[in-house]
Image (tube, helix red, strand yellow):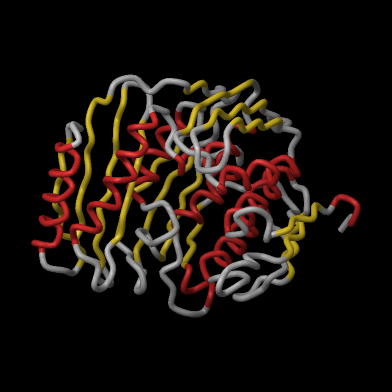
Length: 359
């Protein structure tokens, strides 16, 4: 390895969580630049690689034949050196299998790590991901399917996913299958300054391996909160079966020019009304801010926008620490210019001058 080309990343920077790792892995695979990530998740209660992070490292290494040092649960430093460009194919990733222990680690975050490298791999890829599909601190499957992927399609990315089995914390054992098509070049810059009128709010309340009335109570409460605030809402209760119990509410707000998503998960002893209120209050705060991009989508858009040939600009309802963290990590690998006009916790305008990858 050429040590001069090694990109050193401080994994404790900014938000200091798994996002630093995921962004560095995706860009290392995309650009072929080796990287060493130190102090991984240093500020977390359990620092280092959790099972889902280890599964993501190993899966990313497979698609670009990377040499990896330090890949183990709990590791706080890894070195990742791609030896090939990302290869299309059929890939199976199981968080529990990778970690050699049971885990409900998020498979949606693993999919986000692999999506961009495989989109540039030149042919169609198929993914099967086993683990947690609806777990805390990660986008639920519903958000990926209804908000993230449709927004990326506006840039030229083509991917779809399917929920094969529900997986809630702590049991996991859910499954997502995904198809990633070759990216359509050149990527289209995104301008998203206005969202237009609200068309509808749709949502589903889930009770997995739990009494059906739990889903109904969540849906009823959410409907009352949203319609009471003047938002047209259609909430559907749904009883599901999975490897373990779980509950949640998943909301999607569709506007003329934008789509946004919000979620809350149940937990033992957590009232149904509280689950509904958490998701609804997030949606209402976003709606009141009158910006098109929700706080979760804002940081997830940075990397794909940084790969476009042109200038993108969007407004977000809230500048998050994840957003502020992701920008400088991206700029360590590619010469994109990212400007964030807005303070943490406040609405902001983001401008990205992309740096497309060489053909």
